[in-house]
Image 1 (cartoon, chains in turn green, yellow):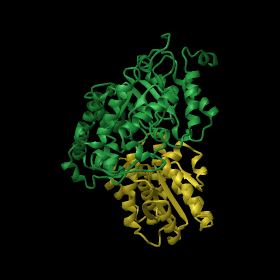
Image 2 (cartoon, helix red, strand yellow):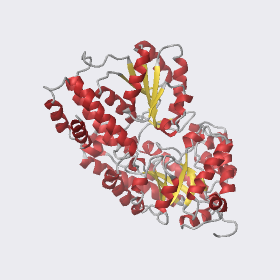
Image 3 (cartoon, each protein chain N blue to C red):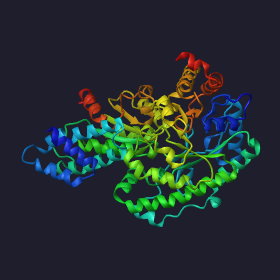
Length: 352
Length: 208
């Protein structure tokens, strides 16, 4: 263990090196709660980079979070491609009708230019302002949708499955277009000040794909894409399962895996030891009805399953805490992480 | 019969609709079409659903298998064919959400199993309630992906109070929180699309 007070970045880098830092890092991936903190609607909140900057700084100060999360909302990338985004008062913006209506539309598809796309520009501006505020003390986590998972929003899940099975040439063509965009978007965020990129890839999870299908599709896409991203990446399955492909995921070049609350965290940690760091896996949907005591129990359980030896960041299992999760639960998670996550985790060993 | 189901299931998982069709046609002289649907198609789809839960079958295979079966069953049992099940009036929808896969899976599977049901697509709460009343729906199936949509089921339930409409829910929020369906007042929850069959059979005892 490294003694003394560490910055959030030092803490995270130490655990990513599979060493024990001063305590388990906490990535409380709050996005919409920034709107609550500022007293504005979710739509208003995400309309200005300055709102997100202020929101993230306030949330980090309140919950003593070990990262800044520049994620606005999942359909941001759909918006960049000209698709529809539907706002709600009580949840994340949602993608509307898919903008690829016919398979043949893929032939004429061109990726948006990152620097000329206003919604992406807002994220980059927020990232730059956040970097000016936090410097090198706190990692700033950027977000991309994987080229393999983005088509769910681009064309609808049913049509996408049909594309994979029945139109292999068009599928490969779409992957090439999406890969170009994904790499450009990830590298623009890194250039703006992000420390690492979270590569959301739920379609690669074994909740959606079999291992055989993953190795033929999402795995190859991830290998090609991540190799061209100019910084570290964390692959996130957004609540999807991944234990059957856990030995394959490091071969894509990623450093972290965001895992599901529906899998055994201890088994995942054992399988990942010294190869991948594990991010997870508090159940964000259930979290909404936890009380402070339950929150503490869940934090303790996660730390006891995955904390020993480093290589673990405590987080939720989806990559976005629901709007309905109350402040007292988030505070309880934070307090429990700070209390029970302090290394060495003697209480874990004593309880074994 | 065991081999027939296994072979039919393998044809579906290999997306081999030609073999699946040939297997069905080969049984023409031995069993009534509805019997093939009940003893082979439904059993195969239920097993595929169970294998998805085990993690040995992809969601994409579940979808494609349902689509193949829906086409097959439409050929032998056209909509409104008297051999289709004597059933309660049913509808399926997504609630303020455009993520359609779950809805399509259940819709295909129920049609492939000989049921007829209305597809409302994406609905907001009030228009959904109006439509359910107008169509005199007895079983309403709601598919959700986003938590806010799942929570809105409670409003649907409240606005349908006093009517004999059973609400069946499914989708990621309900799988991730096994108490959520009761919290929003649903009458049943399906972990998988194929569970919808058993749930509807159970509810039919109460509504038909």
